[in-house]
Image (cartoon, rainbow, N blue to C red; front, side, top):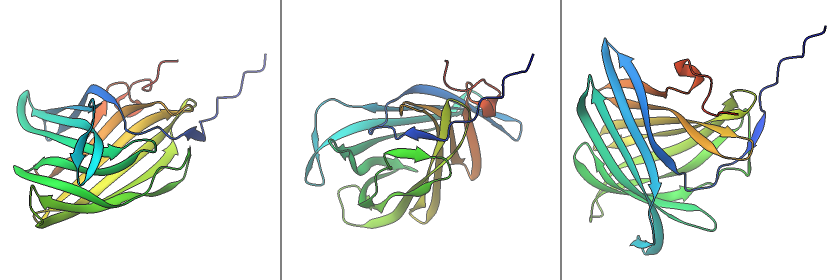
Length: 214
C-alpha cells in the first residue's frame, strides 16, 4: 500500500488582528547552569484614556523573570493604540528603574496576509523621560515570517534600540494559524548582559508538539 505524502508546511496565514491578547504564559530558559522562568502576558484594558492627545485604548504588558526560583526582574508597561483600524501610539512604563514614555513617530501595519519569507518594518519612535520632553533613546520594531509546520507559520517581531545609552533587545515568536489566531512560542531578551531564549513548553523548539492542538 502506498503511503501518503507528508503534509506540506503552511505557506501563508491571515495577519492577526491587533491588539494581541496573550494570556499569562510561563516560558523557561537555561544558561550557565542556571534555570530561568519568564511569565509574560498582554491584556487589553476596558475603556479609553488620554495619551499624547488621543482618546486611546490600552493593554497592560507584564513580564516577570526568575533565576533559580528568585525574582530578578519585573517590568509592567502600558501600550496605547487606536482601534478600527488598529494603530499603535506608544508605551509608558519603566526600563532599568527609569520611568519613560515611548512615542511612535512612524508605524506600518502588518499586511493582510503573512507569507513565508516576507518581512518589513512595524514602527519606530523615541523614548522620553516620563512627563518631560527629554529624549533618552529610540526603538525600531520589525517583523519576519518563517515556515513552521502544516498548521501554522512563525511570526517573529524584533524590537531593538537604546535607553540611556544601554542597548535593549526583544525578539518574540508567535505561532499563527491560517485564520490569524496566534499563540506565544518564545521570547528572547537581554537579561543582565546575557541574551536568553525563553520557550513555551508546547513549542517545537522546547521539544513539544507545537502550540496548537488540532
